[in-house]
Image (cartoon, rainbow, N blue to C red; front, side, top):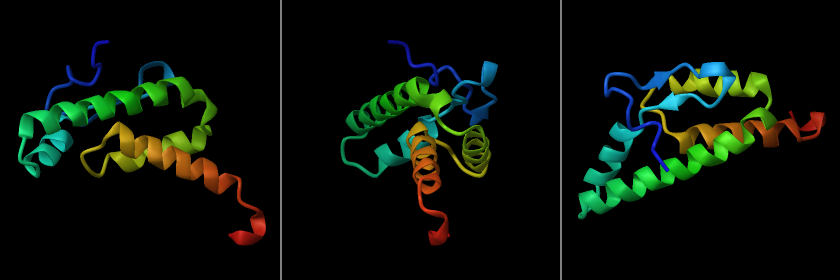
Length: 106
């Protein structure tokens, strides 16, 4: 399967989602930083890209199930740093879990 986020120019970190779907993120910088922290940079880079592809695939399957306001909030938060699909998925899962809490807890 092709990696949709590998074709994104390095200068762009986030491209608006077409048709309201999962946004296209450039995860290479984040993966490269993670890879440099390891002894085997190439292996770590490939593992990071594979992890991000997996997170992207999970998002693609569940995107419409997440609350629209949560999607908008989580995507806008991603603009402040080098975003990853893993972080976006985590943000959406946490927001979804928070919505399930009883009102008296917040």
